[in-house]
Image (cartoon, rainbow, N blue to C red; front, top):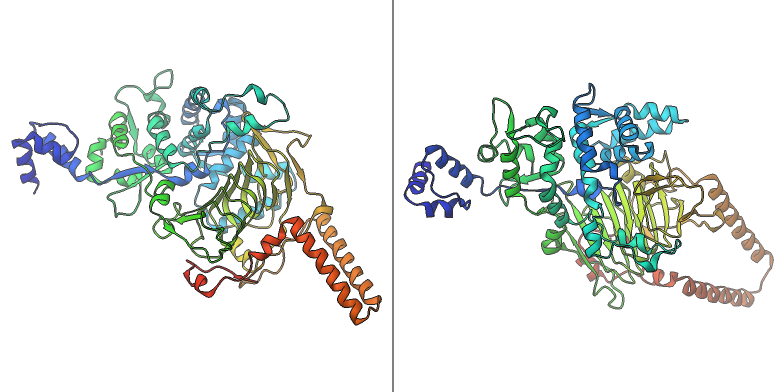
Length: 606
């Protein structure tokens, strides 16, 4: 077969172009003809940006100037010329670089270090062991001792710091878009400018991920080079080589497949296959690739992630919800790729749910990245272990989540109540939102927020503790009441609470999940903080006192009926005034036919 193809190459340059698709023309040497054959063999190989590093890695705020390429080049040279920095970078050395060289505050340095750790494949048992170690720390020195035990892959951490530029606001974009501050928004109390600056979040945008790599792949690969292959300005010299170890670090950002129906593979495994290896110029003697040949090979094959949001919206499996009231679900859209996507690429997209209560407790959700977009006056319960959740442009809604393994991000929302257990919570460009959380990390309050209320986690469902254990989340430590205000220059420590408050115990109420499920959890994991537990106790005492008063009144049968009618009237008036009437009405059990049409198994309504 190979001889026949080579014969065609020799006889016809046109056939060569058609078959290879590379447009290289007719080559007269056997070596060139062999390279064309390799091109043909590699035609089915595609390479794309991995979803999770871009979805979960970049903080949803413009990075500090000291994380620009200029300073990262200096850091790359520094860590590769110092003992003990490669191949693993420990927290003490990164703290020294971040605080001493890049002039970042220590808390921001830890935030980046911890964010990178979210991407790593630690087991649930390892996460729980780490939580236990932290819970036993009683002072900063003990906390530092625990953190000093941690290290990350040096080259991959460099790439992680570089992709923080994903949400950088460029001057060009500001001039042609709406990011340039308006003269009308100069009032210090207005957050309009902050909202505009961060209104376009790119973490979910797979088109932006591809464009970012197409634009910056050469710069990222330069960060992986040995210092002796760099010019004094830190740029790559001519004919420099990329080591196999450096290529392995690109597995953080890139993966691909050998064909349309083939499973995804890490980049270094794709490059170990003969045809692509030859194209990329791999040398077994030096165990390296020529930089420019490797870069050209990768750029030619870069394409959109076939498991990204674009593909999910185009061909993802649609889900029908069981409950539909007065046609309010007509414009709701939901799609998922969980039936085809590999772990780390599973997603569920939910959009435009309006005046509806939706509930899911399904294996279809387990381990999925969920985006809830433009939902209004909705009550949404996703009671399964989740990978990550984003609430985007929602308003007047309540969202209750199962344990979230990595992060929950609230973006451009208004009057939303969020109840969750999550490893990290961040809120940006949002107003009048209440967050009831159990989280081992400090909630991140990004620019553009106003009137954010933080309260303790205050509900449970029967399988909650089992779900928490499955994703490595414990009840301690719990930092729900110690938020960090994050600006573009780092963590901002402020004594005045300009954009948030802690929920007063007098305004605290427990929340009940109104569904029947199986499991052993019968109380809030970890309990309530003392002040809030006392407030609940006081309310229970008032209820008991009221019940005693009614019993001691010795009402007649007619009086009891009249009294009951009056109480019910007042209760219904309160339901209407508070908006809870809609929530109760939407909990009515759906027809049996609708339940059978439901994909997955929803909790039964109470």
